[in-house]
Length: 505
Image (cartoon, rainbow, N blue to C red; front, side, top):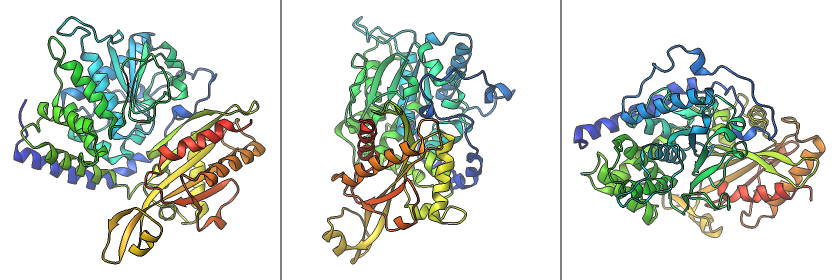
């Protein structure tokens, strides 16, 4: 293993700049709609999907084109192909699938790839002869729960994968729309699943055996017998997975080879979520230090490396100027079926998007630039995935005077000059629709909208105020603004889900 020299580091930085600059040109290739409904939109009890030809069926050179050049890419592509072949040969029971959340951010993707690589290489026997107790067989594949055409909507993922020499067309990654069977049909056939960066599986995976959980969100009590079962408040879930990997690796009688590409991908993920370790927990820092010693960055100082990686990833993550409203909505979308207390309407599909722009900024990306122009696009997207309830959680900075920020006790994000500062502002855009599925009629949609609206209005922890252009909204549409610094999906989703579960009592 060679050390990264000065010229090599300079080359990586140049690649970073060139790649980020090229995303605008490449974005035209990302706007094709997915040909399958998101996993979260499927309903229980649905008939098995008919046999279908996927991309690798109709492109003769699919497995030969766009090769990555690293060991990690070669392993990932070979594993993907073997998994597809085995599922079609009715050998799905030999496989463990490791999956992150449906938002598909860098942390989720990296954690899934890391644990899949570890499980497929680790032996159960330690130096002392003890067993880790991992389930067998050891055929393991990582699954990204986003469609292939949505992968590059996260520029930081594209950059990180490029830096570790993965295939430019992502043919070495298994995405949810490349599964040879529908997820709900495949789930009971598998040996089991492992979930990372997510506290519980999506509904379509409910019939799968849940073997392990790694997460840094709130423990929902799912699968108490899973092993390992790790919930810790780290900045990055990848920290938890990587630490477990290193702990087991160092106990083996003989260590397997960990390619430098996977080590650097892990460092990228931790650096992004911890802001270069400035916001990291002790576990993030300690694990990053252990990884650094094994990586090609081992001769550099930890904080220097993590600051550089965090800056590169953060710059790429913000490069969203050329994304359409539809792509902004689906770029960081998390949704699933939620049970209600209604006998007539027992389940609904709830989804939430996180978008780093105000609603008015997003409206400027529409043809007519009007409020309803945005809601027309939202309707098209949620119809595509059959979502009954959608919330767009927008976050952005607003320039105000220092006196105004102090008067309203607003957290300052950035100092502009002696007079002005920028403060974090958030919006919640709620829509409930009856037209997207068989689950809700008009009266039910009206009732559910009123209940969710009241829950947000009454939530003191949010202290939301109606949007200043609410007079332009139509039926079952509502927008609020608030200034809670940590008022994103982790705060809003439980409030909405609680209201939905109580609906019909």
